[in-house]
Each structure stands twice: as structure tokens, then as C-alpha cells.
Image (cartoon, rainbow, N blue to C red):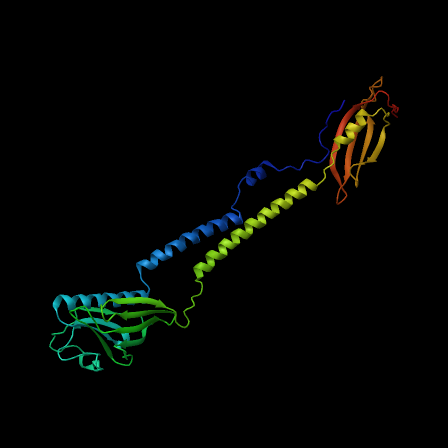
Length: 328
């Protein structure tokens, strides 16, 4: 006959107020890192869109050159007269205007100072004008019909009514980190642009790319560490031995050995390092007749730190064959 008694451990459970407070769970570090990573990814996807709205200086300058060449070629063909693309101020200004009479331009090396200031009578007013305001955009070389015009105050590229044009070859760069190769095919008068590698063009990672990569790496590391920590805790929990006092109670209840009031103790054969202690006292010994009931108090001692009170238990054991110690 075994009856579990209330625990001998003093009550130290959490109070209702603590239980309510414990339910308010905050965000974990992994959750915050995941949220930051998602935000950075969204920002990274939005950056190309924002860049598309406002073109980089070199891209805008290249587009202006292509538009000017297309306009000059179309005007020459439609109007039946030569049209020239004039590059002034080292590429800071592009304009399309009618080629002046008697000027053969760059074909025979005639200097372009004669038309650098435009026609004073307004006969050759520009029909197309673009200005590059970014000081970082500059021409590194300008060659027309195999002659360099890099030092000239102005350079003219002519487009003719039959669709041909002066042969043009130039390199334009932005702060010497990005460069474009500009050409005009003499036989067709069509302008083309190609990207080239210039000194210092090895582009490094941007701050946004580094931040996104760092956030993703941090999330991955924390996820791996969390998984490892969970596995380690599980392995420790499986390897941790918990010896319960109920095994001693079962042993005492099935044995035929009489109980004698007083302290009792023993060890566990299957659990080295663990032992148990207890006390046996008669229950209801003031009654005129022996009841055969004994109050047994058990406590398991042991473990890695030899801590006591790992498991405690009280129960009543009926053993009529046990010695009844007379009360004094």
C-alpha cells in the first residue's frame, strides 16, 4: 500500500504575476536578423529601379551622344545637306547644326575654331543641344578621320545626305572608373557605344551589397548555431540521469524484510554515484492495537555535483511483520 505524500521541498513555484509576465515573449535575435535581411533585400531590389529613374552621369552622357548622332544623320538625309555634330569644351557641350559653307571640317585637318563660336548671322543655329554638367565626365581621346582633336577647342563630325559620315572614335569616362568607347561608322553613319575596361575600373562592392551579404551570413550562422545548441541540449537531456525515489519505494514495498523504525539508507547498483537516505516511523503508534502502518520518508542523493534533494518522497507502507517499537 503506497500513498504519495506532498513534496517536502518548500514551495517555490512562480507566482501568478510572474506567470503572466512570462507569457509576454519578445523577439529573438534570429527573428530580428531575418526581418533586417528581408528589409535589406527589398531595398536592394529597389535600388536598380531608383537608378533607372535617374541615370548615372556616364550613362546620360552616352545617351546624349547617341541621340545627337541620330539627329544629325536624320537631318542630313532629310534636308539633303551636310550636318555636323560639334563637341565643345572637351565634351561638356554637344550640338547639332548645319555644316558651314566652304568648311570641309576635320577631313583635311582644318581647325574648327572658325565655327567654334557659331554663325554670327544665325544661319547655322543648333537644332539639337545637350550639356553635360557633371565634371566627372570627360573625354580621354577624340579622333576624327584618324586625326586627334583632343586639344582642339571644338571638334566637328559631319553627316552627309547619302548616309555616310566622318569616321569618329573617342573614349569617354566618368572619374576614370567607368569608360565607354564611342564610334561612328564612316560607311553607314551609325553611332555605337561599347563598354571598355579602363585603369581603376575594378569596381568594389557597394555598402548595400556588403550589408546584405553580412546580414545573410549572420542569419545563416545564427541558424546553424541555434540548431547545434538545440542538438547539444537534447543530447545532454538524454544523457542526464534522473533517479526517482519511487524506485526505492517499490523496492521496500515488495520486500518481506521487516521494517524497523529509524534511519535507513542504501545505494543504487544501476546508478553509480547515487544513494538514498530516509527515515521510517510508526504511523498511529498511540493506538492500543498495532496498525502495521509505517511512514517512510525517502530522499535521493547524488549526481555530478552530489546535490541532495534530487527526488524526495513520503508514503505509508503496510508491513504487519515489522517490529513495533513501543512509544516512550
